[in-house]
Amino acid sequence: MDQQPDGTGFEGTGIIPFAIVALFTLVMLPVVGGELTGAAGITAIVLTVATGIGVVMAPWQRLSRAWRYIPPLAYLLVVALVREAAEGSGYVFVPLILLPVLWVALHGTRAELAAMLLAALAALAVPEALFDHPMRDSGLIALVVALAALMGFAIQSLVRSLIVGEAAARSSERALAIATRAIREATASAHPRPAICEAACMASGADVAILVEPDEESGDIVATASAGIDDVALRITPGREPSGAVIALVSGERHFVADATSDNTVNQRVVASTGAASILFEPVLSGEDVVGVLAVCWRHPVADENQPGAATVRLLAAEAAAIIERGELMQSLARLARTDPLTGLLNRRSWDEILASEVTRAGRTGRPFAVLMIDVDDLKSVNDRGGHPAGDRLLKAAASAFRAVLREGDNVARLGGDEFGVLLPECDPDLAREIGARMTESMPMGTSCSVGVGSYEDGDDVAAVTARADDALYRAKSLDSGEPPI
Image 1 (cartoon, rainbow, N blue to C red):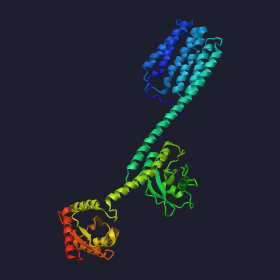
Image 2 (image 1 turned 45 degrees about the horizontal axis):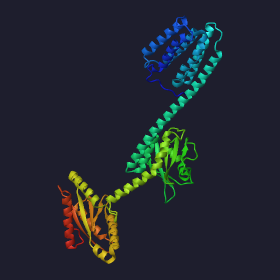
Image 3 (image 1 turned 120 degrees about the vertical axis):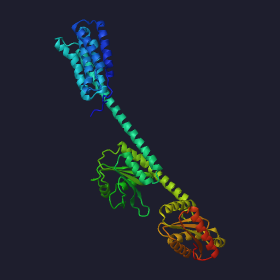
């Protein structure tokens, strides 16, 4: 189908060249020996004026496309009349038929160009038959019409190529903008793998995207994230069943499948779970190493892997490894900011946050909670005997022991040195004392700890609950008793 302008905004300005040349033709007619006062000359003048008025007055925005060709056809009729008025010098005006032909080449379809060529030929040849003249300037007419055809179709092909190229450039520009936005959003996400899959769907117009990565322990290929579909529990053992992802992973090259339902390189479990009609498997590279594959699935057939949407997947996959690495680094930094590096427990900052949140919740709901403050009694002597490495081993062992005796939903934090804190939601004083006793009994390496229990009371703030537990801890250390004071 011809690519062409749609004519929007056409208000007659495109006809100005015809008016100028028509007027110039009338001016030149006496110069070459013609007569403006003859029937042909007068008709040409009247037709030119009428056409000019029509161009100015016509409501072009409301008229159909066909109306725009009336002025060029009227122009050809003027050329025919001027040739007749010029008699023996009419050959001078033969090349003027190039103007409407070239105009249609720029603005019309191939069919319209062919019709205009026939009209131009008729404008030159028909008067010879109507007025019973011998065929004049037949060689020149044939040459000009042939030249008009060659130039017209060549220009039209060039215009069509430019239109297609411009459309492709705009499409690529839009795809690049979408890919850039998708990469930016994925980079900023706290969960990079699902964000990459979401970005792939957004950038490519696909329905489903799945990120698969090799499992270092088993050697299988497993799905680690997806978008457009519920979490996919996909595990493929290379060599045991077909897999486009394995092909892309091993080769490091993209693998495109236009008909996923019949292609023997595609795992049909993937097709069944995604409803995919076409799939693009794009390798995810970290340097020169393939670290995963981004499988992008369309539920409608896609014939060309080089469409702009597929091209953006390549760009996204090129950034995916860096996005994942950055996301994992940010998650690691976030964990470091909230955890104690020695024991892996929550740190003081996290403790303050969760305790404040629990006080707020208890004040709103009236549900009880308790706080345990714990000191490891023997840390100094262990450090003195075995050095700080021995003390570190004791702290890590104590942290593991504390975690083992706590309930699900309880939180334990290392507050500094030999001090630990435990938050016990939904816990009354008796249960808190029981848990505190179990923690004392769990101490490793024949060591002991002191435990103070502070239970929340109506109207308490963080400082009040903490002070109550600290006071109990002080009494426990003073009493040197295994039973946690409260």
